[in-house]
Image (cartoon, rainbow, N blue to C red):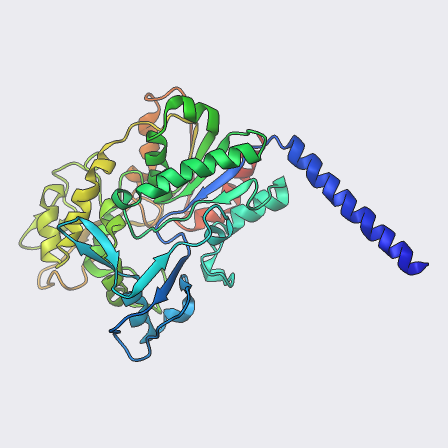
Length: 407
């Protein structure tokens, strides 16, 4: 008798949940969300069958495995394998990149929010990305992952000229998610490089399509006009915010990414006369970037910039409601300074200015240029001392997004 009663209770619970979900789906009236990640903001998987490796500890694999973000690979010696597997090879004739021979790369989880909420599939804390925003939407507002909450990961190493397929797939994902959610227009939430990627996507759509399918674009620390820090990475590399990793080692992979060339300072935001790199013998402005790349021994950096400059220079308004959020009052590289006696292959000093620690203020506030260029509203809000990554988990930012998504 007791067993029968338990079974009845379980059946009613299941029916209740089913009806509740059915009611929710049928009456869902909130804008579905698609996350658009930035540079380094998508999981990457690799399959290896290489004839040469940088170290005997590097292995072949019979199947795909997580390479980014896999913390186990970012340790001494093994990191050499990681760099060789993640770097790109540029062909100046075709003006395209390819993986290291014997390396097959794929970006997992298209349409799934998980690969952009957690860059490390094990959910290790250093690999959390859109996690806090995702949890807020699910726990507080009733969003459902892979239904009303989606993700659009892409190969962030490559610039727009090699990411054409992403824009086609994103349009299909928007339309698919729109249909799944009772024809509710979509909210795009983009971080960092995801901001200009979203802009390029919206520029490629007709206004009638945007009116039907897009509710709004929320950008977090968007790199609208590039960043001086990109020049710093080309010169000395970046340690990804951890003292355990050497910039000079990571540089070998970072400088092969065309997206880094796309994110160098835009001529729309920096004057041609402004000094970006200062040395005792020569100053480098936008007009001298070609020579700068030669002098820091990364000539392909100039090719990456040339290939994607047209995407920087088209700053046509997106034609949708914008919520432009970013941090301020965080020391950010304004200029590289090589003092007397310091060679270009050595570490420069950094002259600092305002921004979010990664992106200069003039680039972050680029969305304000559209205030008179479109009829759709532009909402602009800054957060003091909130840096480029903390904006993804800052409580005030989460509250702002929650309030917006309730409307």
